[in-house]
Amino acid sequence: MGRTLTRQERERLEGRVAEAEAHTGTQLVVAVIDRCDTYPELPWKAFALGVVAASLAGWAARVALAPGALAPGEVLAGTVAVLAAGAAAALLSVFLPAFARLFLDAQRAELETRQYAESLFLSRELFATTRRNGVLLLVGMFERQVVVLPDRGLVERLEPGVFEGVVRGMTPLLGSGRVARALEVGLDGLVAVLNETALPGAAENELPDAIIEERGDP
Image (cartoon, rainbow, N blue to C red; front, top):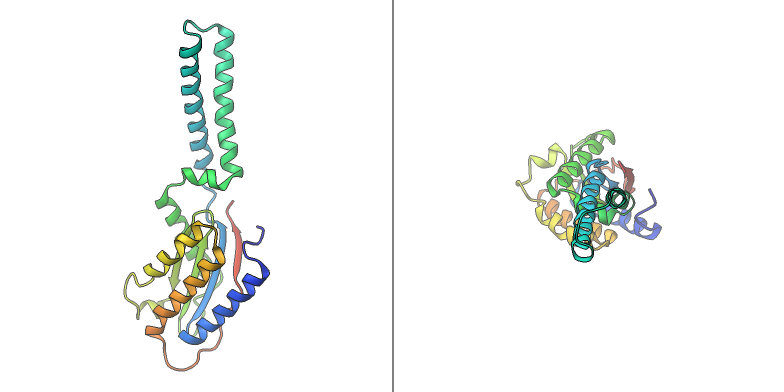
């Protein structure tokens, strides 16, 4: 995918990651994912909406302008127009993420983003830290979802739901397209939470501070 973050934003955020790790004694990894699933149902939902909207518009126009029986040619033309409207809506859902997002179920988006985060946690071996103190902060751009995934060593010391405030602080900024600012707010929130459970002694930097940007499953 094209970079979501500019070079300056990446460098600034990577510096913030290093600072947050030094303050909390944890290993933080930040990931920005373009799309966490293919969502093959979205074009079909858009197609159905286009067909229904075109059918209703055609029926209303016919009743208002030319009531009476339809000629065979009119039936064919109407059918083609309805299918074309459906196809156009389906294409819009493929090329315009904002339009496709209208058909995305919120629970599905949340589930797919969490599953992507769990898969990335394993594939990048974020569990391979001495203290099992890795934390993944993942943003799904298309889904506008945030996942904070801590490793086992932190889960044992954290209260359930402790990261909900971090997610709530990031979500409005993410929705308005302020991705870098959302990540900064998220890192600040993580520091506030993780400072409460910081272990004594400086921890070795075992995971890279570089921001992960992936295309995902467009």
